[in-house]
Length: 217
Image (cartoon, rainbow, N blue to C red):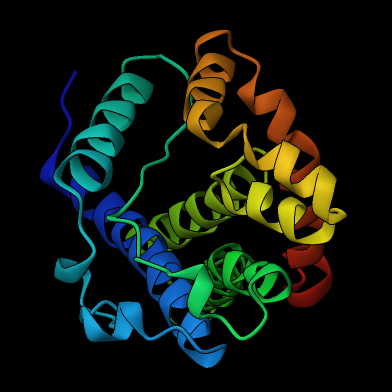
């Protein structure tokens, strides 16, 4: 099986920007609500080099793309270096945590909308029909919707878990937050048992429905 440079090029931009803009959004919203930790470390930037994690941004997505091409699971995800957020610096830590956490998936959804608009531009009847760019736009939509859905799962330390902690009453929030050290093991377990797609399904379908309503894909 040949993974061509063209295939890699079509995936690199959507994956890198989906991951890095997700992280930059967290830092920007944290600054808005009073925490300048990310800003002081130079992480509120659109420069992907500031956010790339060699394993999560390059190795893992690359291996998943390769296995998908070989007939394995059609599922690609990754991560960047997490943007540092000191929740204690937020003006109202429990309340503002929701907005900081929601910023990442929100950025992914906005990027999915932009890729969907580009899809309409590059499709055969579009203003600038181009098969390769159309494929890149398709990848951009898929990658961003998957990252949005994955991060909205209510499992700490994923963004959905932090949103849940923000919304729960204080006692329940503290109890739920104790899951955080095991959260990534839960996600990996769901992936290993082949049920992660099913768990993410409702969020993916909602994202697809929203794109249909907004862009008309």
